[in-house]
Length: 398
Image (cartoon, rainbow, N blue to C red; front, side):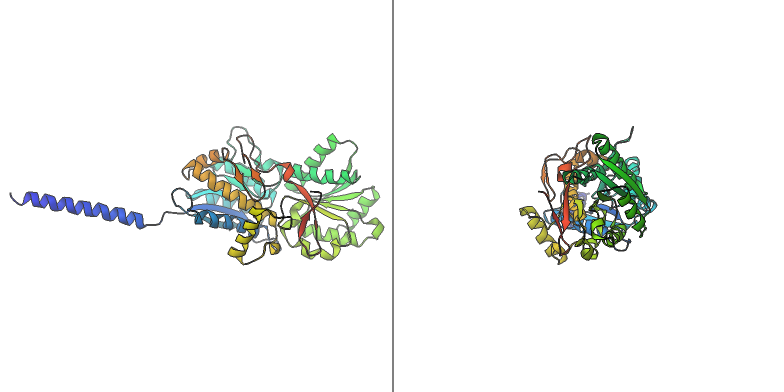
């Protein structure tokens, strides 16, 4: 009977030791990472957009993690999937990400047809879709009866087309030949043209449709001339943009029309590949950001981060708008995770709509998103640019 108190004492000591050991082991275990997904066109030959978006996300993650991460020290981590620019692959990749409970949001790539297919799925599955490039207006459009899970930090086709046409009209150009792909991106751009033309009846335009992969535009360029076009407005990626400028330079000098381009061709090596042709024609392109423009303190710090993390000068980076947009969007996502206080996707979506001000690379965001506005940029961030002789992109008219 005398040994029972001692046995009880030994039991409590052992229990306390066990609990302390468990606490120590728990503290020694690293916190699980918070996963960000990216489905983009990594496998599309000649395209640099997916890689630049990845770099923008990765640099922002590096900065966020170095500052302590999110949610009490959890590190952000990026996982990528290749959708090759195919909508069905993008949908499959997004669905796969949605099954992973530690994925809080998924970035898409450059192609609007992919983002347009994913956007309604994002609302259905309750997983935020973050768009740093795709421009079709309807990507962030709210759908009746469903919460909107698509957020964009990029230009829209309406802003792009309006900026291009304002640039044309400022130069006295009122007759336009519009080359557009037979895709969702092309239809979105044509709708933006029609909307703008309805407000400016003096503007005349003729639409020339083409299919992705077309390389011969000679006949359409001759037809544009015959119909009295004063300029060609192109909605192309680099794959079609290069033969268009090449074939324009094959015309007699007096017949070469100015080309005013959407930004799809900024996703590849167009500036370098078309350099000799661009010296022979009047070519401008719409965009939102370039490291070749004068750099403020934020841009200089980011440029130093690119050098530190990737060992390259920012002037060497292709698809710079994708990098810049993805960089800013990742910082906004981290803010949303912190504001939500958890990895709950619905809570993060709600937090994205209530973010505080952020001094970003592309702009100063007073209120990045609201419940009724899932666009972080505005039309005033959209501007025209020309390629310099060294292939870099520099804004004009600012």
